[in-house]
Image 1 (cartoon, each protein chain N blue to C red):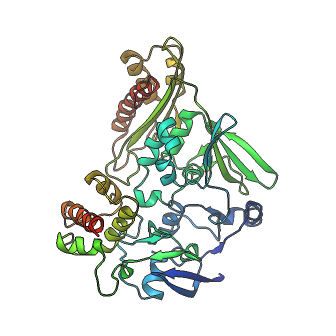
Image 2: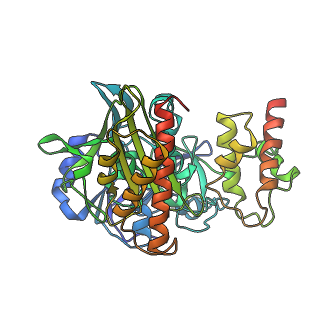
Image 3: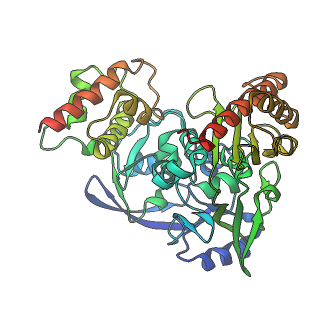
Length: 291
Length: 158
């Protein structure tokens, strides 16, 4: 399959890329890893007269802690997250997530920023970033601005990014001690989108009670779902089986999935409940020191 | 739509061409360079038959634009055999019957080469994980895993 004709631009600087986006407006798309965009163009589900490839702009791939944040460059490959010792040891929820996105070959090109900026509720990082309380940095003609992740996803395949903005960084508050997270995904086979998936990140207080809980759901509606009622419910609770059971029921109620080949609405909601319970249990165990 | 002149090193040899923006890397290899060892399977980023190494990293060449490969290094199955001698991965697939129809084989071998370059002594789980983006509908993967193990042992013995 061959995409409809487009012109290709390969800017060497961020400001040049932003200028191109400003010039071509809705006729332009940002090409990052290309693992969602190129299939879309090939299947002719989407089209763009201009592709602005950010692949040759230096300084967009990094994973580092700085100023109280974990900072991930927008073009950081999923495979780099998988291989990062910092991610594996301190942010296991991100390691869990990267390991189940598409397949290893796709992850060699697919980028964390692209996974978010594509605005696909079936992508995996949105739920993870909701659970972690991340924010994203958008770079546009007037410089940078930050957008909290819970205000980033505005609709199916749409985000708060302006036409001339590029997602250049993801910032995650460095979790305090006694924190842990996990991502649990049900997929029919490697490479498939989630039938259902849940991300959970918790921080425990001095006495072992839950001080903060973040829960995000994948493939659970037209936008990624933040299970706010479940998060609120868990605050101050002991992370025992009864609390996990109730929180996972609340999370399931927040899901409004569509029926498709992967299952009926009832099935997907039930899987959202089961996976939330498992993710919470694992997140709590990790917060208590388990691997 | 503008055309772009690209320079790509393919299997160690510098190649130059004028290509349309939308030309896919796999079509550049197969049609412009007539390197038809790289197969097109699903054409939807699922099957991995079109896997090549881009700067040493295995990627699906049906989901990369030829212009994205400008100035970079591409390795295809045609570059594995050297001086009439099979690459250890090719020898492994031959000895362990790692193929039946052969359609997935070039992609499987390129992924395997990249795995062994970074992990010379992979476990069975490492191998299965590495090839999880390459689909085979003939072998049930058992002989493919054996082939990669054979190649790993041969490479280590050298």
